[in-house]
Image (cartoon, rainbow, N blue to C red; front, side, top):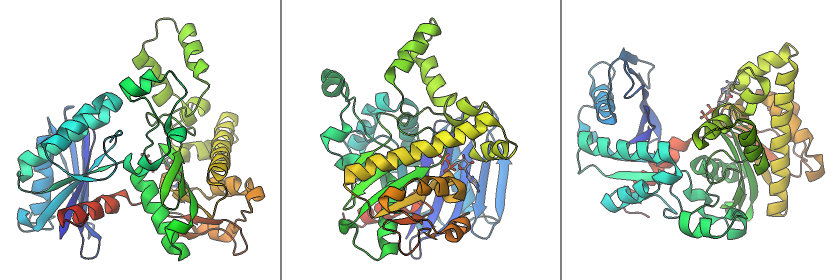
Length: 404
Ligand code: ADP
């Protein structure tokens, strides 16, 4: 069975075609600049063969046409006939309180995803465009499945997901914590249990997804108890260009300084001009901050110190939430590739009984998976490269085969 995994953004569309016989990636690619002039289409086959062209893609339907042509192409393609694709799995950012698990797509599901657009204006709108475009290019008979970033977090108790603002905002407008990166937290927590040779039902795990966007989750017995992102992916630890958790008065105070600032401009300030970028004034990319740290740049050093402090602080919170902790997992771009941050964070967790193995930690980069704590550490610490696409493909397969 071959499954096409789709991540549709407002101006981009990423895809992977996965062979479920051995869960190998046959091809993957990206359509960039959809609807904004000259687009870029990149397709890479498993053997490294690449197709990269500049092509106008006025909408998602045109983008899907490129994907279809590439996977069928005589030079770079991987299938002979479209019927070899058994199903499509879509990543959806916001499932609200409606979607607690992945679902087969039908008109009701599409309209429910549409109803959540106010909670994730850019993402959910793009996902619906992606689903509709996929239906028009691949045909109505090809099963499609939606997998939500939020659904793994749907097990949070109300005391964790409620914000202490007037209750009507929850009742009328669904203002609450939803959490994001759920597919990644789900994958790495399950994989951690597998690596430990234990049943996830018996484990308390803190998962740290540290990328451009970052979130932590407290997972007990395979169920999320709390997570750091909130109503939107702005909450939690500081990120590449997002502020993370703030005293809410910072927002109203800045609004009083920047007279006439609109909610959109404030959102831009907090989402795109803050975080590592806002503090360092250099970049939102952690590699650039590391280079500046090496040159002794003080604001870059401060940005790194803040980031490590935030991660440690949230791990401490979640150890309290879980009443202990058996394992900590680092994943995503920074979590998988930055031994220094992991070392600093773990050295600050002595009180939990965390002991880091420095040699193992240094080796865990660029896709390596393994344990970075010593054998006598009370808490096992792992680096696990995330794989959201495989979770989407597995859910899609299960639903299509009627096994859910
Ligand atoms: P996104 O949230 O966009 O998926 P990623 O998970 O790709 O982000 O993480 C991006 C971050 O990870 C950047 O700050 C980048 O500097 C860092 N990163 C990615 N790859 C590496 C690497 N090989 N070495 C060091 N840092 C990396």
